[in-house]
Length: 200
Image (cartoon, rainbow, N blue to C red; front, side, top):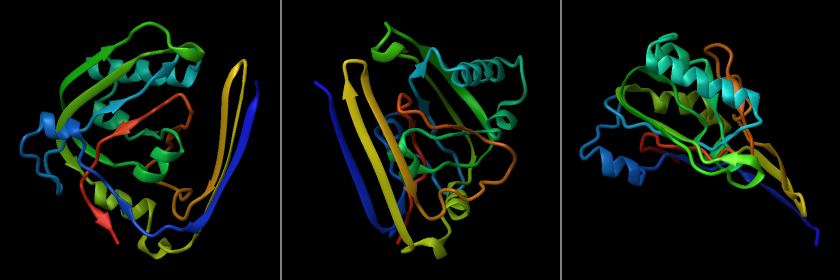
């Protein structure tokens, strides 16, 4: 049968953090995180009927293959944001010239809702100015300001619909550096490995 529920949250933003992922531990034995070499990997499922995602994927392939613009220039024009949890916890990073060491893509059978199990990832080295990026997106003076999230879930025979609306200090502020393409789609689980750090 059909099912629906609502959720809401009110409180304050008290801290923000990065974490060291298992992927970093496996691939970079002795990483230096503070403005040094950094392992960075992005994985997402690509809905085949989403034109923006297909164009983004094709642009990524083109930039990697050398048939398009420089990778470091290209990635500045895109700001990948996944579902609300990812957006709240990880926000984004500025990547300054990065050298791609390896690149891979894989796909499998179609999953639910027409999603193909695409994955693309790269590993590289360069200056990853994560802390400065955090300071831009989530200024310290915004901490402990009121924050709220409202969401709703509805399921029926056609699938599951999720809608979330949040008022989070700093999240909606202009990221600067030119136009960003915002990809915020419930079918895009995004794994974004960033610098280890914490603001209290």
